[in-house]
Length: 392
Image (cartoon, rainbow, N blue to C red; front, side, top):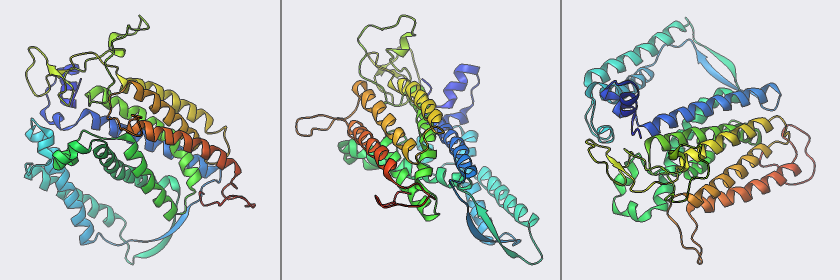
């Protein structure tokens, strides 16, 4: 396992770069997942725009003004924080990146230098566009131009929702140490992030008059791909998203042993027992081999992404691709829960996990949405009597 990129680069290339301890392996793959999702979403929104299914929004801007003091200050502060902490991590090489982030430690020269650089870039950019007399212009902003905003909203509300749902699922641990539970990089619940991010993005889309049905269809393949890539981070770092003990014989002899039973040595959460002869921060492995469920989910979700990508041009009723995503996602997660380690609830004698409850609701919602979308008038088409077209 590679808790952070320092160990990966050291093992693969023999290079020891202390600053790479700052880049958590799980976070690295989450970042790639966001980039992959943004790329797929941009492609789909552009395609729907060319088909006339999505439309631009006109907005008024002022061009030709020099950089204001507020803009320069904001850029300096942003650059200072990145330099003080991010560049500082490479300069200082902290042994414990998590404590370093939440401490006052950092590099003042790197912070001031990058802050001035960011402020200088903003001044140069605005100075190039400066006019003798600033003027107002009307510009057209298409939905695909707002993908950056979608990604930021998804990151902020997704992380917050993932932490909230995880702490609700593990309430006793949260009550015992709330500060650690909130600030820790571990302990993220996918469905919590999905729900909170979806609410934020749908609110933003409604504000800018973007068709929710077409937007949801465009996000479906992107979400599935992002989940598949994000699970690579879980597998590589060993963040605790693994399965129950794998004590059954391996079904296919040609499979590597780790695909059926894995002990996650050097896992990022230091679970299990000490590894003989190992010294350092991450020197534990599980006492017994478990199912590498994160790897299974990556493989299955890449296949499901392929199916959604194939059907996106063949299912022409708006909203049904997203309904299909809900069904695919719910079924996949429901069955993987059968071999995953998770907190269980006690509900009238039944003992489901939080993910089993939510995944079941997603499947039911997907089926209802599939039927409902077939009865609704399509966006930008004449409406006939029928169900309320609020979901447009």
